[in-house]
Image (cartoon, rainbow over all chains, first blue to last red; front, side, top):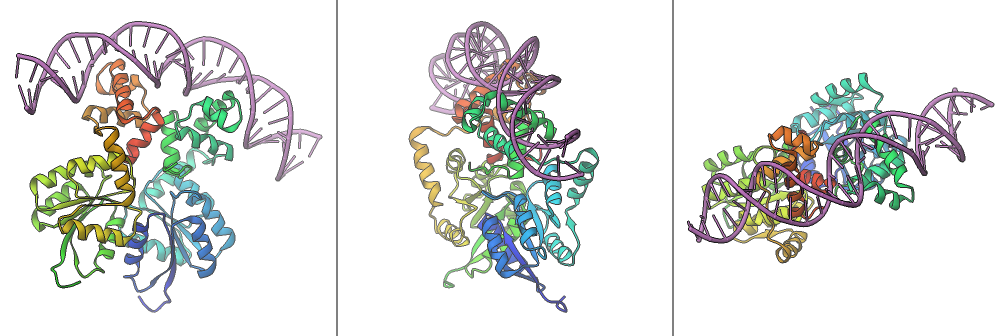
Amino acid sequence: MNERPKIRVLLIDNHPLVLDGLKAVLETFDHIEVAGTAGLAQTGLDIARQIQPQVVLMDINMPKLSGIDAIELFRNELPQTRVVMLSMHDSREYISSSVLHGAAGYVLKDVSTDEIVAAIETVADGGTYFSSGVFDALMGERVEEGSDPLTPRERDILGLIVAGRSNREIAEALGITPATAETHRKNLKKKLGIATTAGLIRYALDHGIVSKVG
Amino acid sequence: MNERPKIRVLLIDNHPLVLDGLKAVLETFDHIEVAGTAGLAQTGLDIARQIQPQVVLMDINMPKLSGIDAIELFRNELPQTRVVMLSMHDSREYISSSVLHGAAGYVLKDVSTDEIVAAIETVADGGTYFSSGVFDALMGERVEEGSDPLTPRERDILGLIVAGRSNREIAEALGITPATAETHRKNLKKKLGIATTAGLIRYALDHGIVSKVG
DNA sequence: TCCGGTCTACCCACTTCTGGGTAGGCCCCG
DNA sequence: CGGGGCCTACCCAGAAGTGGGTAGACCGGA
């Protein structure tokens, strides 16, 4: 196990507990080095510039800059670094978004530590790693639709929907008419294939489009 | 630090990652012994009967038996054992529910490891420990209302609301009339002080009343 | 230049939710 | 046996969302 150099890993998660825990667990493995940790995607990016990790383990649901959006930033600035997403949920859109944005792996948080180590090893070797259920979700996704990410405006609307605002309130907040807010809402539903407002909210919360504390 | 015997701790969390991480972190402290871990409240209870831990660190958001409901079971069966709740969120109802059900502490997951250790030490000594923000929430709560937890039926309704069902669909699913479903929905809102359906959904997701994978 | 995507805006009919009520039956606890 | 909580059910009027359109303006890429 120790014939090769350590894999340098950067951990990004907005829960210090998860961060400390992951760090403690991963450091029990000889071939893995936790080179840094960060609580926000943005600070993670800053740290990554300095420490040049081989692998970034990043939570997908974070306030401010979401993990999904951060993937591209990492790939642009640190093309050598491979990003593995950590997520509580196996939702289809979420997974395919990660893949489309360039994640090298996607691991559910409820898997064993061994699997996370396996994911780190695999992507460090240039491969990709996806939790079991994740792969199925991806396949199912690919055949049915092209997984269209939302437009910026649609994210605005979605955020306000989650906040419990009505079309009228959304319109006021964004300086548009209620009719337009309604159109955006309709487009969101059609695009995501979600029929209900409840579904939209769950989508948004699951996908880190809005922070729950908002 | 080592003049006193180790504090025996049982960890309960449905995320193996958190479990392993917490265990690894806590075991770096000489005076704490992680005597067992469990992924479900029910199995945690079974294990606790055998190992008789002094302190139980339990996640509040778990499938099947929620952490909140489990507090009472612990207190009934293992009165010597003190329960500290771990939670992602500082919501008022959640916190006061924990306290009312007999939790000896309430720690937010986004605190430092040191604070968790402090919580364990404090409750092991017979005290109570609450994260900073938690105390404020409790005080604010106490003056305004008695923090009524939901009735079983209301949880049913809330689960279906989160699933995106309309009042009519909820009625069909539960074998009641739409009018009754509507009444429950109204009572939920009134009881929780939440005006919008979106708010109800966020409450449900935050409080583990429904599992997000449902 | 034309096409496609985005953002804006409106029309319509229909359904659903909202927020006030009231109320009866049931069961448990004091 | 009374009170209170829970579950059930209904009334009403107004507000809001739904789902189907159409359409103009802008902008960037082929």
